[in-house]
Image (cartoon, rainbow, N blue to C red):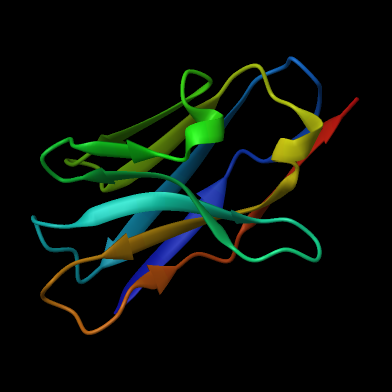
Length: 117
C-alpha cells in the first residue's frame, strides 16, 4: 500500500501563489509517476500536472507557465508551485501515485485551494 499526505492548501487572492506538498510512504518503487489532480464543486476531477521518476512532466494547458511540478525522489515528495492563481483554480487538489508494479493508482485525502477575486 501507498499512503499520500498533502499539505499547503489555503486561501489566497487572485494573482497570489501557493505551494502544495505531498509526502508518499509505503510501497514506493523507484519507477513511478506522481502528480496532482483537482476537483472543483460540481465538476469532474481533472489532471493538473504529473511528473515521472525520471523527471518528465505533463501539464494541463490552462496551468502551463503558471504552475510547476517538481519532486524529490530521495524524500518521496512531490510539489506543486502555483503562481498567478486565478479564481478558476479553486478546487480540492489531490496527490496521486502510480507505478506499473502496483494494480492501481493511490490518492491522497486532498487539500483545499481557494482563490478569491
